[in-house]
Image (cartoon, rainbow, N blue to C red; front, side, top):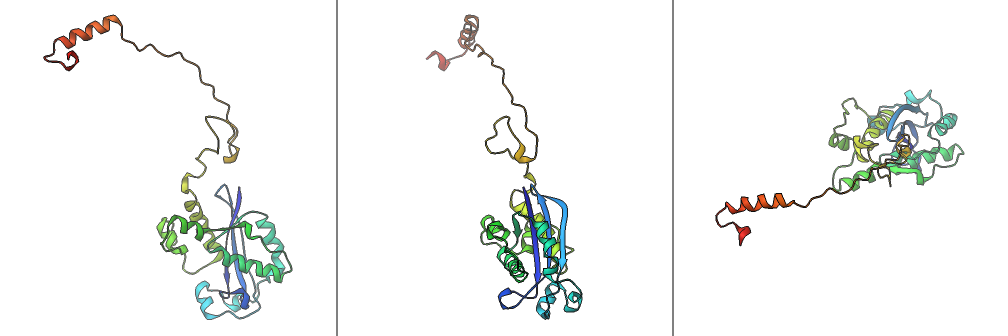
Length: 231
């Protein structure tokens, strides 16, 4: 199964009030394993960069001024994500900005049916716990020491590791396919079908004691004082 883990950086918190996406980072995963294929882009938002946003991701208006507009590279992004499910942390935020940019570019929005929200998964697994990316990376022992500021590709890489942990950890791929009993098709795990195993029928072994064994048992019991077996 192909999935895309992604993250965005923006000029603010609300695309409905004019905030724009300025960076996107995507990680390709197949069967919950990163393939090494990534997509990363910066975009010129055609507006200023608020100081509060720049403090989070470090992307200034000057840095973004010579970057392409989103609509100029939208085809490359759409080709990379294809029709795969899209995994994000607080996914409604990232989907909101992605679809707002697609609308501005005159493209169809990404269906929310493709949205996988790792916050929702974490909330089910750890009710009442802190659900930030930093907190969950700490919980699962994911190294984030190189994360000085937010960055879309870096955060997507961390999230890909977290997603694996939230959905089965390092045991993914070891579980049996549904309905698999001693043989059959392992194609769901990316493995070739195994030959059906046939067990050889063996008649039951005799288990009744012989007369000689019974006699030896009676002699053994007879040497006991007040054996309960004689009562």
